[in-house]
Image (cartoon, rainbow, N blue to C red):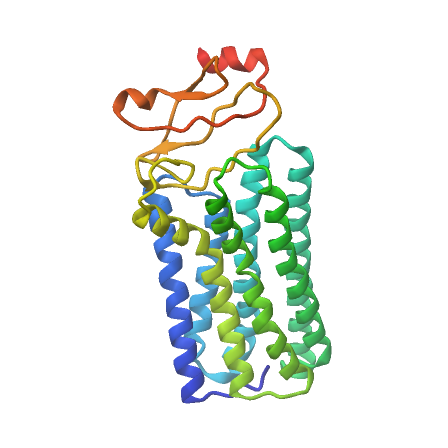
Length: 312
């Protein structure tokens, strides 16, 4: 990838793509912060944002310096964005009550961290001994890790969301947001091909900028798309995305065979609703007294000692 080859076209593409990614991430963090729903996935998104700002700044920094910086920054944006996505799935798995769901998501997160570190070590060693001239080994590593990671980010949600309390249209919306990770693979293929054939020019660098910016946009996609859905959708009968029309986070609740219930995570103005068990197998929120409509969601059985603690 380096020596670096700058051109007016590459500078424009880099500026536009990174600017969109940065704006999307700032919106996500501000919105989630105002709703008091910041979590580990947002922390990873913030880390990816910082790395992406570095990528943008390197367009105008001295090439000798930016070669080293971009080697680390490109990789960090991509994998921090993926960690943000997988941590959003970890949150779903933790609330699902399924041990295997938790194991799958944590295993994916650990594998992402290992691939991230391995790529950084490989690239830094090449910068030390070969002046950051990435060769065939890097191209193959990028292709293998990217395809593996993006396939995981598509397959895991398909498995986790197959029995959740979302309508079919909303389930498709959520799965499409996660499935957008395949766009990164679509950029990785030509980028890795250019590196594989030792083509190092402005086009190669342009693909690297697009890839990093696109990964950051994709990690914010679920929040942004869901927010827009809630703003423009006229369907108010299903509150699985929001409470009182304000998006906070996607509520994904596993459907069990039991007729007993467990409280869902509906929220109103950033505060978690207190919900009590209803004999008919539904959930009734105290917010109903304040005019907020909450949809009952069938859930798993709660042990009696936990029910007493919740009521008290």
